[in-house]
Length: 384
Image (tube, rainbow, N blue to C red):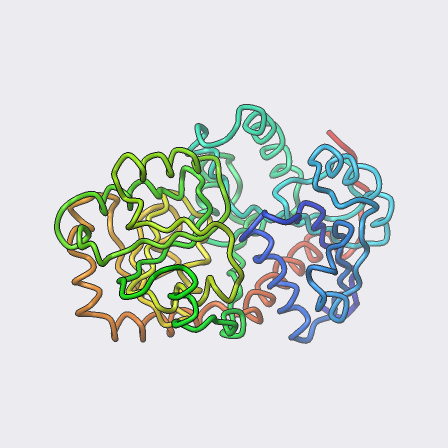
């Protein structure tokens, strides 16, 4: 590409608590700042966004909205009004939150991190489900190109929404060792969280139903090596829709001394807890990508995960991948112990496949596809 184009990235949806989907786009922005390209990037973000991500203004132009966008209705209204007005100069608008506003000035790229609600509608509130069923198909039709984090998500979109293969591209997640460089010491976290002498198994995941904490609690309450009283499951992450049920199950199973629900902790503590673990477990039923498995590999910790959704694709041969069956997981702690060095080395090699620079290059290829298809010109779009 010879001429400079203007790309706007819509991050109005990116408010505290959205989790991995925010990291996905932010790390693409990091990568775009690290490599040479011909695009001028402008980020449209909630008010106060750069206070949370101070590096962003040094890398890209940032325009903050008049509000914090924590209210979904207000955010949607801003996308249809304020954003449409202030982004008129953009050649491409990249919407990272899974939907395209009805008023759009430019060619559009849409990021769909996942469509969990298609396979697990029961895990979404009725109001949100109705919105997704209306807005997502409309946005997919309207977008010029769709970016996804895994081939699993791509094939899901093609199967359920008749999306043409030429319209969807996989843009990998970006990870770097520096993202997990802030690590609390083992002695510190063991002391502060009461883990002295315990064999730690870590699970960093919000307590949403699909994260499947209940499967791990069942293992702990069973027999064999998981029943060893020295084994303790340490769960970090915010309160999800299944939080009350998970805590009640732990109480009913008599696991109060064998599970720690620590909630949200600092990045350093989260990394420290994973780093001291015998294994990081990831029994999730659904992931568009599953970033914690790569983060654990960067920290040199073996991973045992489910065989669901995108997870086998992401971990490759660098983790122990098992069906969600108690018998399949019964002896896995011993298996990890015998294969630990090989798993750690394979994990480091696998993590090196996901870098911010490669993520950015794949995103640039998407932008170039859109520009080529549109002849590099900006076209006013109206709602249909």
